Image 1 (cartoon, rainbow, N blue to C red):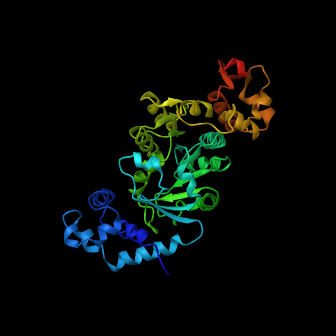
Image 2 (cartoon, rainbow, N blue to C red):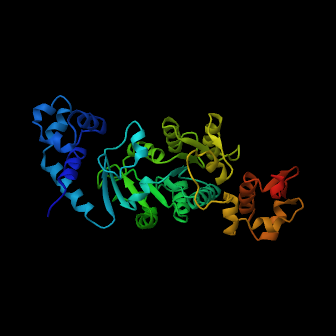
Length: 367
C-alpha cells in the first residue's frame, strides 16, 4: 500500500512525544518542510528539539502511530489537514499557536467558511439551551458555520441549531477525533460527522485529558469570526474561550440573564469588560464586519422560536396584565415552566414584568 510521504513526514513529527507545536514551527522555519527536517542528520536537530523527542523521533512506537493514522485517513470522510495544505483554515494562521496538523471527519470545506463560536455552561438551564439552539439555527440560516466543543449543555444545543441551517456546524474536540466525549453525545457526533465536521489537533485515540479542553478552546474561537457566550459561571471554560477570542481580535458577544442566576454572572462580567450585549441573531450579524449574510432577512432568535411553536405562551397572555397562576391555568403548564418561558420572553423584549407579579405582552412597536 502506497502512502503520501509528505503526510507521513508531518505525522512522524507531530506524533513524536515531547516535540510540541512551537518546537515544530521552529524546525519548519529553519529547515522547510517535514521531509527536509527528517532528512537531516539527527545531530543537526539536537540543538533544536528536546533530547527525549530526538530519541523518540525514529522509534517503533512513533512509526506504529504514523501507520495507524495513514490507515485511518484512507477511510471515507476522513482527512488530515496540514500547514502545507490549501485546505488549512486561514483563520487559524492568524492565532499565536496554530496546530501544525488537524484530523477531520466530515465536510472539511466548512473550514473555509465564515463561522461563529457559540459556547456556554455544560450545566445550562433549559432556557439557556433553547437560546443556544435558536441563536445557532438563525445564524446558520444566515450562512455562518456554528463552531463549538461538543460538550453537554450549551455546546450540544448550539450544534443542533447549526445543523438545522445551511451553515452547519464544526465540533472541535478535546480528544482524538475518533473518541466521543461525553458519551451521551455519541449520536450527535455521528450526525455532525455526516452533515458537519468533527475536528481535533490531538492524535487518534487521545482520551479526555483535563488539560486538553482549555487548549482546544483557542481553536473554537480561532475558527470563527466572533464568539457568543450564552450562559457561563464566573469560573467557566467558556470565559477562557471568550478571552481567547478577544486576544485573537474576534468579536465577543454575550446574552444577559437574571441578576440572581450564577449562570448569568460570567456573561455579565464579559459585558462589563466590553463584550457586546445581544438580544437577537440580528444583533450578532450587524457587528460581524465583512460577513455577507446569505438568505437572512429579519429573522431573530425569538422569531425563529415562534416558528417552532415555542412562543405559544404569548397566545395565552392576551394583551392585558396577567399573573403566573392565571397563565398556568390557561396554558396547562407548571409554574416553573411558565416562569422560565416568561424570563425568555422578557429577555427577548416580548414581555414586560409589572409591579405586583404581573406580566404584559409587548407588541413589536413597544420594544
